[in-house]
Length: 168
Image 1 (cartoon, rainbow, N blue to C red):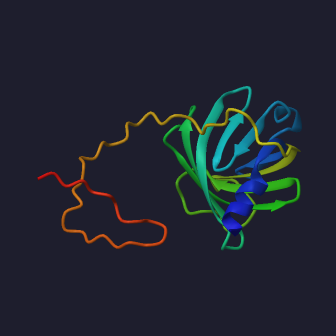
Image 2: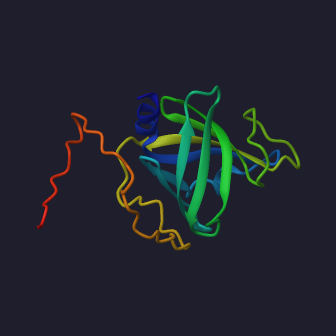
Image 3: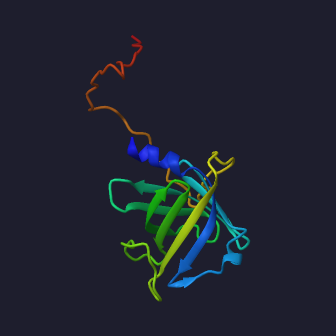
């Protein structure tokens, strides 16, 4: 339940209040037209440079909370960012590793760290429309049908025994 509650709390539209990469803060005027849209575990980041789409997983059992982001569409498609996050009302802070190194342990960057720290401010708590997380360019493997022979069926109140027609 805490996992689902946190996902729901992250939903909405977010504007960049601050972005720092490798110890260098981006100028505020460069952030004004960028935003992040989150619906469930799917996101879309829109900026003048590009649109990024993907999915993410969170772990709310750690302190700070962990986030793993998979980019599915856009210039970063196929890449992962591992990071930490904290949500306080309408402010979301993320610190992400951009280079495949271990997840940051603190909300800070330094020259050569390969980390980006973002502070986002919620502009709308409504679930944004059309956030699909993108479409993976990699085809999913098609698995051959599997036989259930050799497995014993165990009936439960939630899964009744299947009805099997016998032909003689």
